Length: 357
Image (cartoon, rainbow, N blue to C red; front, side, top):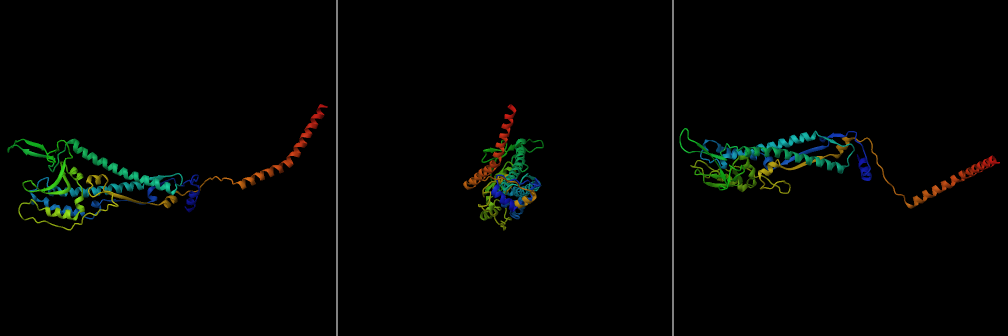
């Protein structure tokens, strides 16, 4: 390979080295290709700890909870994050596995720069195609909800009211509204407002930072952000507030040890206040890393030979030398050719003269 690199440096414009193997699978020269995920997906047991923390509100003792109360649907919030982190990981791993088996075709050995450019473009195309395919599936799911007028099982989109107590009493389905009645679930599936804790009279006792509730759970979660979970003080306040509005005195605040998510603005692709929608559409991928081996590509290509050409401009001394050599050669040649030519002319003339006499 060192010989090729040397030739490439001097004769890059005309160098041609045919490959013995034109088709090479990507895994022969890509050492590794990995995705690093958002801290919500990469932090060990972070989501599970919060899931278990709020699970206590799912038994019969929490009969007083409003359906819009975050304590009522919080485990669904964290379950969504867990499932989508796993889905993102499996989607990326499957795509990388298939990508590694795709053939990279080159009839001639590529220069290191051209090879890196081509492979980087291919990897970039893979990354974009993964996101586009996943985004289409999620968008289709959201469109089905909106287009078919589905009703949330949590009763966050519609509420049912009975006009009177009777066996055959009519049941009225009333669309819920959010943002102080300015957005109705009858006309939009994306209505949301900040999630809160409520007391038994359905009055707000605590509002959670950047977490939303709306017509449908998926829209509520996608519009939310995880900014609170990057702050230890915000998480502590959230834990202390979980007892607010609870009737009786049997509940005590539980402060458990959960380290906040770690964020590095210098390396991260995300910001602290990015919505979960932004992260989901990026498959929670913070950044990609890869290592490509040109040497392994060259060995797999296995060129049998190389050809190249070059131009050389003559200097004055060399040109004069060539000129004198040519003149000398002509002079030497003429010494032998001219006498023979003269004799032939005389002989021809004598024959012609004898013929006419």
